Length: 386
Ligand code: GLV
Image 1 (tube, rainbow, N blue to C red):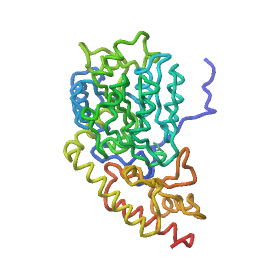
Image 2 (image 1 turned 180 degrees about the vertical axis):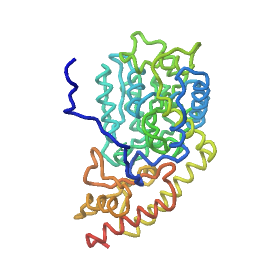
Image 3 (image 1 turned 90 degrees about the horizontal axis):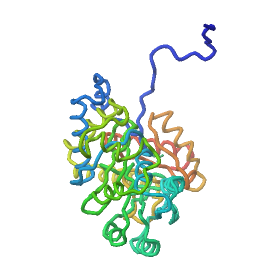
Image 4 (image 1 turned 30 degrees about the vertical axis):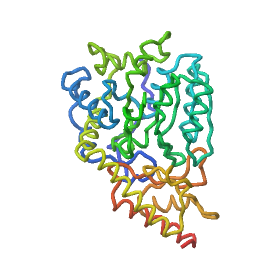
């Protein structure tokens, strides 16, 4: 054998990670109970105690989505994997999707659906605004799409899209309603059944307070029927929800599809337990109260929301206009260097125009909000703005 090359040696010694307060758009800090669950002994991914944990997660997701549907699970991957699972299963090549595109997540779905051969109607909206019912009605009646995509909370702009009445509108036109809830699930109201939503995906690392790597997912009966009736197999094996669903016990016998990320699912089991213990409505209220405290303090400093229409303002990712002449990046840097707290800049269409402050899950506390306000005050004072 030739000598082993050590030109590229791996690390040695124990990993060191700074502890930070993550008040950007996510990941948010995880609850200690969630982190502790990840150091529990591994189970085989097909062991009965693991199936019990998966069942508990599915029930927790039914509560979180507010659905009676049997079809809930975690896609093994980040929020993007939920997006990919939804788009690749709900659409067959040549079918039409209307993408409510009001930020970076709409842009991603436009790209993704195109890759899967769908006909994409890119319904664009200026950053900082949501869609009205009438705008969506007009587009749906004109295009009769197989799917309407909307992002409930766009973390790149801070817009909260109302879903009221859209389920009925979609179903009257043979359309399935697909909703991204990556930065909203657990922090703002979601009533999947009552609102007639057909497919939802989310992320583990935002309001739910777990590490990134699991995507809560839901199909209505209607969505599942469509997937079952496909003429073509979904082109992705990993995201074929007929197969993933089998693994999660949606159908008859459980079937090995892939090796689930066991410790990530422990974390999500704990995230579901914490949410059930607090109560969903109480969690929504807590997020609302912390966002109100944040805005009271920001306004005292003369800072203004990026989203003009109050009814469209997202409370889990708050977007704040950068005043003329202020160096936004210096404020972000000062917050991290001096207060150990993450405040984020804009993303996609909002880069350089806004700051983003996350009010999410375990981090949504009065002390964290006060710390963010202190960091803003200090950062602005340093630029002679207060
Ligand atoms: C990621 O989700 C972001 O909004 O930055």
